[in-house]
Each structure stands twice: as C-alpha cells, then as structure tokens.
Length: 176
Image 1 (cartoon, rainbow, N blue to C red):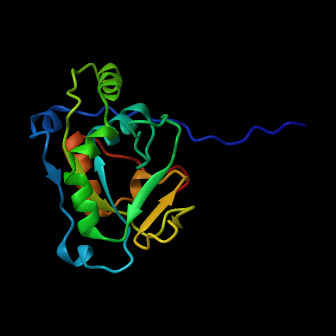
Image 2: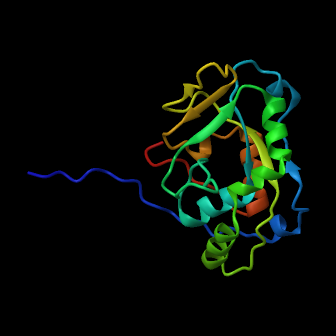
C-alpha cells in the first residue's frame, strides 16, 4: 500500500508592499540589538527583503531566498558567524541579485502591485542552529544548509520588523 508523504500546505500571505516600496532601494534594515551582534556562534545573513516578500506571498514561509541563478525550490542558504560580514553582504550591491527583475514580476503578479527590482535588504540572525547546517571547509566563519529554514527561526527583532514592513503576521510552522 502506498502512503502519501506529508507535504507542507502553502499559505500565501497578502503582503503589503507600500512601506517597502517607499524605502530607499539601497536601505539596509538592521534592528538587532548590540548584545545579539556580539553573541558568539550566532549565525547571520544579509538578504533581500524583496526575496523574503516573494517567499511569503507565494506561501513559502522560509528564509531560503531565491538566488539569481537558482530555482525557487533550491533551499541552499548561506550564513556567517561574523555580524560585520553579514552587514557588509547586505550593503553589497550584488546582494540585490537575490531579487531579479523576474522575481519582481512574479511578486507583482502575486500582489497586483508593480514592484521595482531594486529593494532594501535586511541583516538578521537565526535562533538556534537550523537543520542541516554545515561548516564550509576551511572558511571557518561560513556555513550553509540545504534544508528549509522556517521564517519563524529569524531573530525576533528582525522578524517583527519584516512583518511590520510587509504588513503580515507569519503563522508558526504547522505542528508548533
């Protein structure tokens, strides 16, 4: 007898893009308190708010953003233990490649709003260690995971900022 595997139910969220679109496209959202920035072993990431908005609008409540050369179902996500490195990545114009013109069109189709392809980024950390995280060879402060990292694992300060900017309340993962 074949058993059907459980797959997560997608819950698209009605993201409100007005605040995000009103921000300067080169803005970096960074609301983490200094004590978190100094915490040893914490995993940090710089990411496109547009890519996170696209995930939430599409019903993917995960932090794994669509990279410019990756498919939507590619869960690879990179972290660093260096806050300044993550901040530098968020400030780097190349980070904007996480959110391409095609992604902007996709988000526009989901929301009915015209979306620019240059949007602010965010620096955030994750609570605990996500599943499947591995250290990257001899690059001691870099880590990656190919497992989905739930949105709710974002540090509470950054999570609250993203939810407020996008006008959403992301429900906890099913079964939590």
